[in-house]
Each structure stands twice: as structure tokens, then as C-alpha cells.
Image (cartoon, rainbow, N blue to C red):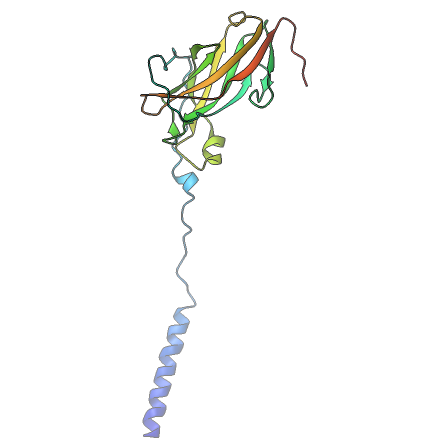
Length: 190
């Protein structure tokens, strides 16, 4: 009986050793895909021309627009550095990004409202920084830009509001008013 147990023990030890040897070659491991890379749609081609305002006749939603107004003319970050000061001799370029804050998707479009009058924008420029910041890969084509001719906005104090059209096109969201001043002379740079 001792001989048979010894043989059984040796057979078991041999099988265990073979099983352990098989573990020397682990299965290849694949890292899960990065959700920001996998779900990012190909960059959308930005709309080249400024569209007519899209917000006319739509109801206003109570939520604050998802937006940033990056520049008014040469004035950077006009929301936090009010009033932005720009020259009357140059076209007024307003650019930034906007998205539907409820759906967390690109908007149907963005209007810029100056002193109560809506102006359409070219909407859909790629903004990978926005998609990355909000961890929402679908929000890549959210950039906007509009250029208003020099002299269209008179000299003096004004207010701009970024108006984001909901993704479904049935309402809009307004941002807070942003003060800016148009001057005859070149604006002083800080």
C-alpha cells in the first residue's frame, strides 16, 4: 500500500508540475479601449458661413447655456474680464463653443445676441478640448464663430449673450450677459 500511495503521490506531483509549467505562458492581456478615443467621432467639418439666427420664435429654457465665449475681437475671456474693450475700426469677431447642457450633445446651432439682436454663427468647428474636459466624446463639433462688419456695432457700451439652440432644435438656452465696450481708438492691452 505504501508503494501504491507513493506512485499516486508521484503521479499527482507530476500532474501538478505540468499544470504549473503551463502557467508559465500567461494569456495575452488586452487593455480595454480608452473611451475618449474609441467614441470620438471623426472631426466634423466646421460650417464655413455664418448662418441666419436660429433662435427666433423658440421658447427659452430655464437652464444656463453650456458655453464659453473665448474672444470678442482681440479681448480674450470676456466673461471674466468685463468689460472687454474692442476697436470700432475692426470687424467684431466673436468665437467660442456652445452645447446643449441638458442633452450633453452638440447644439442645433449658436446665436450671439448683442443688445437684444440675434446674429447667427458658423457652428460645428472641432473642439477636442471641450469633449475631453467634459468627458463627453460626442461634444467635439461645438465651436462657433461669427464676424460682424466694423461699424455694425456702434461706439459705446454693449452686452452680448451666447444663445445655444437645444440639440432637438425646439428651444434655446441663454448664457449670462457679457459686457463689452466699442471704442474709437485701439483698445489698451493689459
